[in-house]
Length: 306
Ligand SMILES: *Cc1c(COP(=O)(O)O)cnc(C)c1O
Image (cartoon, rainbow, N blue to C red; front, side, top):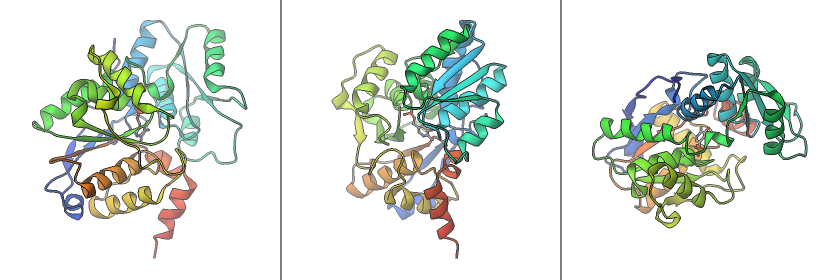
């Protein structure tokens, strides 16, 4: 069972000025940042399936985990509000001073936030589910075989919007988005750009994509760039900063520092080394609240004011 949370299909838009800047014949943006609910983003498509399953199980509370600036946690909170469910978000460590970006929106959507301290956040989440009764655990990033079906649907949309597409470029975090795309399009048509959210994402994507497609997908058939992780997941890299600036100044589109900034930096690197292919599609997975929740990204943007 699936619940309806977004506005589909999301637009597919040409990005001619960015294409020209990169020496590409054409380039397209799939605007999954414009999904409708809760300030938008790729987690909406996964939540349509994972929350559909939770509702079918009779859940009244949903519990999930993530980093404090998790877009998935924010959209879980928004979706729970839409569906009349309670949301509990479990974050690592202690509450910090900054409550900007996604965290501020979590509060606005009425979610309960639990800080796990030095305990394992997944275990804390499981305990809350067990104690709450009529509660469902939504996986980290919404990435299980149920959630990934949302990106099988997105891939079908893309095939209708741009027959003959070659490569979809996507940020790789918890893996469900890339897995759904790979299940529908085949591994050769998806280029994942690793963000460093998982220590070893390739087996995760291969396993999930295989489960969804019902065939075995070998991890070494996946196309993944791992050159954009930099000092690690939470860091705003120079290449991501350059990608934010170029995309903003050629197309008037804002990327986020952690996911779509890295994905665009990977697309730029692939365009330069000739491995991108014709007619690439950049999947814009959202993350704008994460931009405002990242002090380095905000300071970088402010420093470009003349
Ligand atoms: C979560 C997220 C991703 C990565 O998606 P996964 O399915 O976790 O790999 C990409 N972009 C944004 C903005 C996200 O929030």
